[in-house]
Amino acid sequence: MRGGYGAINQEFTSNVWKSVETFKVTTTREHRITTTDGVTSETDAEVTTYEPQTISTNYVVKSKYKSKETDYGGRAGYRFRDGSIFSAEFLRRDFTGNISNESANTFAGEYQWKPVLTLDMAARYQYDVIPSAKKLITYNSAAMLGAWRLRDWWDLLGHGQYSYLSDDNSIMRLNVNSYWLVAERAGFYLGLEGSFITADKDSSDYWTPYWEQRYYVVGRLKRSYPRFYASVEVRVGRIYDHARQADMDAYNQRKVVADAEGWYPGDSPELGWDSLIGFAATFRKQFFNHWELFGEASVNAVRDYTEYFLQGGLTYTL
Image (cartoon, rainbow, N blue to C red; front, side, top):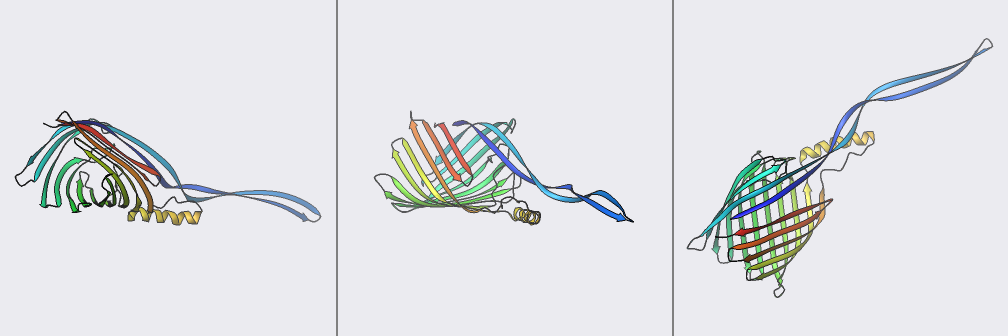
C-alpha cells in the first residue's frame, strides 16, 4: 500500500517577436535669400514627409502554473519457481490547481528475470501521467532494463523507454551507465553515464527536447546495512542540445532582418555543448517489519537554470 502528496510548479518565459507598421518621419527646412532688381527677399520653408516602414520588435511573456496532487494505491508481486518476479501496481492520482479537479487511474506491470546468473533483465509496461502543471496528459510506455555484472567490481546497466502520449506526441529515452568499485571498504564507485531523450513534437505543456544528449563522470558512495541503504553521488559532464529545424528556420529569417535593420535577433535555439554538474542522494529505511521510509533528491546545474527533483514516501507491505 502507498499514498502520497506532492506539487509541481512550472514557469514559462516566452520571447515573442512581431512586426510593427510605423512611419519614418523626415523634416527638411530650407532658408533662401534672393535679390531681384535690387530688392532682397528672404524665405523659409519646412517640409515634413511620412514614409511607411515595417520594423521588428519583441515582448516577453511570463506564465506560472502550479498543481497539487494526492495519490493512493498499492503494489503486489509474485515470485515464480524459477526465481522470476511479476509485479503490478495501481495508483489513483487526484489533482487540484491549474489542473482543476481532474484525476487519473494509473497502473503498471513489470516482469523481472535472469537469463544468466550475471544478467538481470526487466520488461515494464506503464500507463501514467506526464509531469505537467498545465494539463492532465497521460501516456502509455514500454521499457526494457538490463543490469550485467561483468565482474564482481564492474556493473553495466542499460535502460530504454518509448512513450506515446494522449496528445499524439511521443518521447524516447535511452540511458547507459557503467560503474567500477574502486574502494570496496569505503563503498566508493566511479562510473560513466550517457543519456539521450527526444520528443517528436514541441509542446508548451511539458518538457519536449528535440535532441538532448548528456554524458557524465560519476563518483558514488554507497552504504548498505541490515534494513538500511543510502547513497550519495556527484556527477560532472557535458550536455548537448540540438534545435528543431522549424525553430532554426524562424531564427535565421529573423536574423536576416535584424542584420539589415541593426538590432539583436536573440540567442540561437541551437545551444550546442555546455557543462553540467549535479548531486544526488537516496536512502531507504525499513522498520516495524512492514514499514519502509524512502527518499530521493537530485540537483543539476545546467546552463542558466537548475533542475530539481525531490521524492519521498512511506510504504506499508502486507
